[in-house]
Length: 170
Image (tube, rainbow, N blue to C red):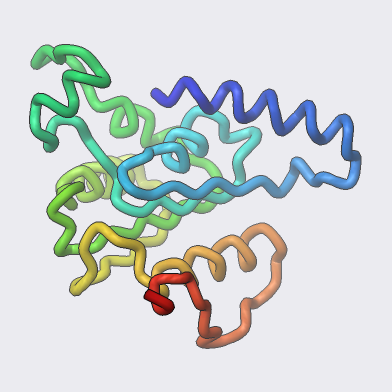
C-alpha cells in the first residue's frame, strides 16, 4: 500500500480548511512511471479520491531484484500484491493506461490488475498504447486531462484538443 497517500489526504483536507473554495467532493489523482498512487488512492481512500488515471502500473515482482529489494525489502512467495487483493473495493472512476512497448515497466502488472478488477466485477476504463514505451505521449496526456474533466467537472472535453506537453518542443 502507498503510505504517502495518508499524508496527501491529510494535507488536502488542511488546505481545504484554509481555502474553502476547494471542492473535496471532486478530487482526482494521477500517476505514471510505476507510481501506483491512483490505484491505491481509489482502493484505500474511496471516500476521498473520486477519479484516478494510472499510467504504467508497476509491480515489484516484474522488476529486477536489485531495484525492488532496494526499496521494498526481500519478498517471500507468500506476499500478495495488495492492489489485486483490494480490487473488489474499487469505487470511483479508474483509467488504466500502458504503453505496450514499455521496457522499464512491464505491462504484466497492469494486466494482473485488470484480471483482478474483472473477477471482482468492477468497472474501469483501459487505454493500451501499442506504439508507446515508457514515456508519456501527448495523446496519453490529453486523454488523462479529458478523463479528469469529464469525471470531475462533469463536462465534455473539447474533441481532439491538441495538448502540447513539451515533448513536442524537443
